[in-house]
Length: 77
Image (cartoon, rainbow, N blue to C red; front, side, top):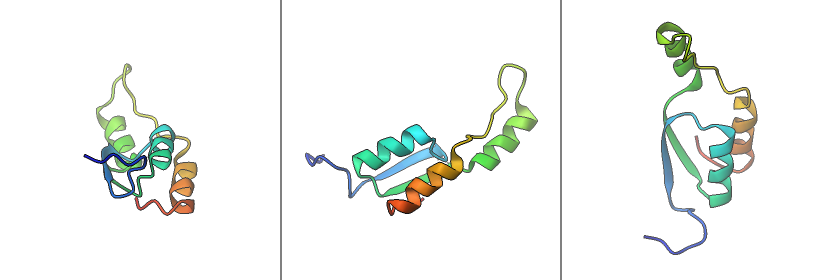
């Protein structure tokens, strides 16, 4: 366990591409590597096929902004 203020040596593993809120948290924590299992495009396609009226996945409108934050801050996606 680290007692450092930032998580520079850590990797964040997530199921789907990070949303803007999670990207912000990763940025402020100093996380420099994020590994995700499914892109938003893949999740959107799955939701369109298997979703119903109660659940229909919508792509994050901030995806381009999230990717730009990662690029500007040397966060490896």
